[in-house]
Image (spheres, rainbow, N blue to C red):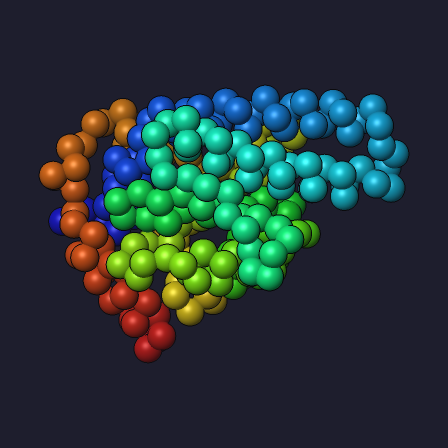
Length: 215
């Protein structure tokens, strides 16, 4: 049996598809580069961090949804309740995918873990809790997945993209894989019939979470 990490990586690659993964990275890279150039021209040092965060957040939502839609995935820009803002939502056979901008490349891993688990301010600074927004109209048999995007620490025009599965308790996360890991799995071309069935995956995640609660 594969490790839970390998099983989830293979399932994400199969469900999202290589075409979506590659185009998402390409389009986000282009938008990060364009927005950074615009901000450098039009904003001073005081407002630059705020402008960077808001533009990157909006580009992430827009590009994840539009790329998924063009790749044939079920994608929508879904309004929040109460209305006024939107969150990205993509549904596959096994996952409901949302997305978020990680706040800073200097976050320690432990702090990132806590923030991702709670999903508080996941759509910062525009909405409240992404997890609650997604879960409110998601069928319970699917796994909640987050595409977390951040600037590269060396080259701020290059987005780093991770895929994460939070605990149901929202106090941590089961799984984290960089986009490159998912693309390697996609290149291996595992057939869907050879993948671990979703009920087994969910049972393994539940067992891990139960063990962590007892520890």
